[in-house]
Amino acid sequence: MRIVVLHGKESFLRSLETDRLRDALAEAYGEIDVVRFDGKETLPVDALDECRSFGLMQQHKLVIVDQADEFVKEGNRAIVERYAAAPSESATLALRCEKWNRGKLDKIITAGGGLVRKCDEVSPAMATKWVVGRASKRYGVTISPDAAEALVDRAGVGLGRLDTEAKKLSAAAGDGGAVTVDLVRELVGMTREEEAWLLQAALLSGRAEDRFKAMREAMDVSRHDPVFLSFVVTDLLRKIHTVSRLMDGGLNGFQAAKQAKLWGASTEPIVAAAKRTPARVWGALFVDAVENDARMKSGRCDARRSLERLVARFASVA
Image 1 (cartoon, rainbow, N blue to C red):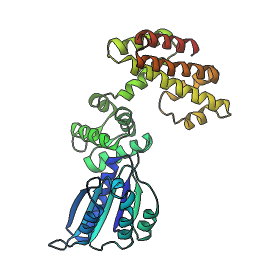
Image 2 (cartoon, helix red, strand yellow):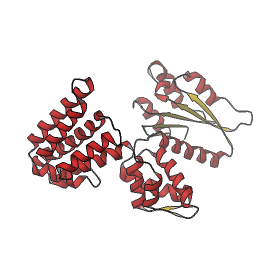
Image 3 (cartoon, helix red, strand yellow):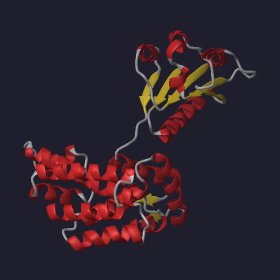
Image 4 (cartoon, one colour):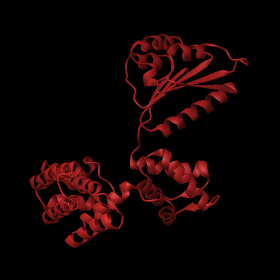
């Protein structure tokens, strides 16, 4: 391939795909020369001239342009399209960016045997599967699906952080060792998102005193800002209201949860809450929570009392 476009929000995946491309070129041509450009600071003519020029040893070149969306924007696009129609045989041009506007250039690249590949964020299930394979192939340890799922729960789906945590866990497990759920819980810190999940689980627990206790501990012990805790409650109300509306539309609980993109241990309690109370009631409380959030952020209310009021209303509805 003479031109490869790697675009999407998952920067680590773009890097992995670039490594695969470099390895494939090295296998085909032997030693290769890698040249990098910043698309925001580079004129197309400079990078394309690099593609066309021969190195001292006439090695094949991999010319990488980051922020390629800036590289091909507006008046620059025509010159890149002309190059793509007749690319140099002595170089491979890799265009990398987060955002890519599809168009005529894509058709020219693929018609010439090139590749346009999306490197977007992966789902939790895909991230879990990726961690299992990465730990085995890259770091020589075994990580069970349960441990991999626990790691994704704590670290999120960003492959860069998952790789960093997998490397740390592998070092702790030792060569040929096994990464367990307990090891993940011991070594991988709880993320803000996981803390939010735990607070939402407390809100769904069914006991008013547990709800107030969880929120007060979050404020007084964990020192969380009431605005963040307000978001936790509002986000939970959004999920419940969404599921409730979908069920009113004829879906069963499982179908509604799937369409609402819910997963994990909180799914069943959310569905149960959606069944117990009409969607219009959840909707009214959700609107109140959004308005409450605005008041808190503007300083028009006592944040702590406003949050406790919201939790009390949630308890009465749930």
